[in-house]
Amino acid sequence: MKKALSLFMTPVLIAGMLAGCGPKDSSTSTSDGGKKAEDAKKPEKLLVWEDKKRGVALEPAIKSFEEKYGIKVEYKELGMADEMQKQLPLDGPAGTGPDVLTLPHDQLGALATQGLLEPLKVDQSVLDLYTDSSIQAETYNGKLYGLPKATETPVFIYNKKYMKKAPESFDELYTFAKDFTKGGKYGFLALWDNFYFANAIMAGNGGYVFKNNDGKLDPNDIGLNNEGALTGAEYIGKWYKEGLFPKGIVGNSGGSAKDGLMNDGKVAAEMDGPWAFQGLQNAKIDYGVAPLPKLPNGEYPKTFVGVKGWQVSAFSKNKEWATKLVEWLANPENAKIRYEKTGEIPPVKSLMEDPIIKDNEGANAVAVQSERGVPMPNIPEMGQVWDPMAKSLQLIATNKQDAKKSLDDAVKTINEKIASTK
Image 1 (cartoon, rainbow, N blue to C red):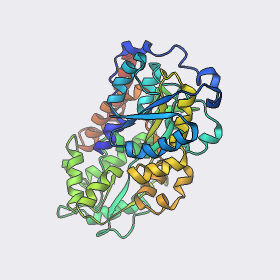
Image 2: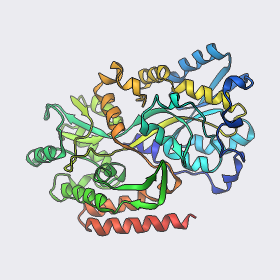
Image 3: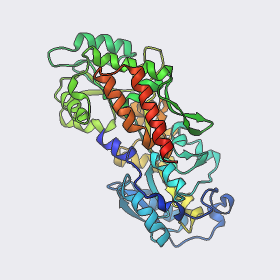
Image 4: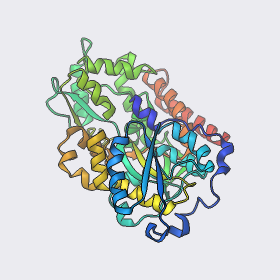
């Protein structure tokens, strides 16, 4: 979880005064109305900003691109969730920034609004290579700002010592947990006081963060206290009230407490992401992975999906060729190589049926659950949601406030915080 939160929930730190630094025409599609790379003059070199410790997966794609197009490609590794967003508004105008960079999708709205990213113009056949949710994640205000590189989302992880297979429904899981939870052992654990995880239950019952109107998120229409969200929050509260979750997994230390119990073999199952696999392997836990089971209403939980993508800098002097490079880096062949070298799961439709992912239990579970989930909102207003919802869910988890009042108060606070930023 720590990895996921650092990648996809990092607040945007760029000062508002930089909003005017981007090129004036960055709200349009690729320069010259989407002119093809082959029609543009070839640059001698393109620069890519890659995430730290990921260059090994980039090098084969660079080599094949150079061989095909005769353009030199260099790359530099920077922290994707922090360093890039700080350096782009400085290096871009100075002419030392990248042509292509990689970002978590929840940063796109803020950076695009500041004119730092170039909308992409690609053929529909290219878009059709990827899952709908991943393309949605790379779209802001109706414009495409990247092609997907990797996806991650919470899944169902179980200890095979206690479970032979994953349950089909949360009703089945609840019955199991009621019987199993005793003597310091727990049938199922989840960080549902953390909105990143709790949203899956609320959204699966009909709640939503911002209303999606034909691909555009409306920050004035918040569905976190509607009937479905309330049903989900009450279901979450039920697990805490009945003692199925220990008190120690609430708050900032909840993640480490849960991980400790799971890795010590005291938990039959948990809701967590692929970042948890390594710890379980180190602890020598024989674990299985599956998509999350169905909720009591018969729907699947709609987990937040985080997508890492390839973007084009608005300051690139070679936008057509930078776009061509993005297409090349994200294509199925190079996405497969990246998965083999880093374990990052690409949201490429054809690869989900490839044995390399389909036959890997963990990767397949993440791929399937990603299709059932919803992209974490990428508009700047999302930054005003996390804290009020965390406080609301913790009040519910500790039984200090009923779900309706807690959610109503949270939504009121979110609306006030959003209004104060306008």
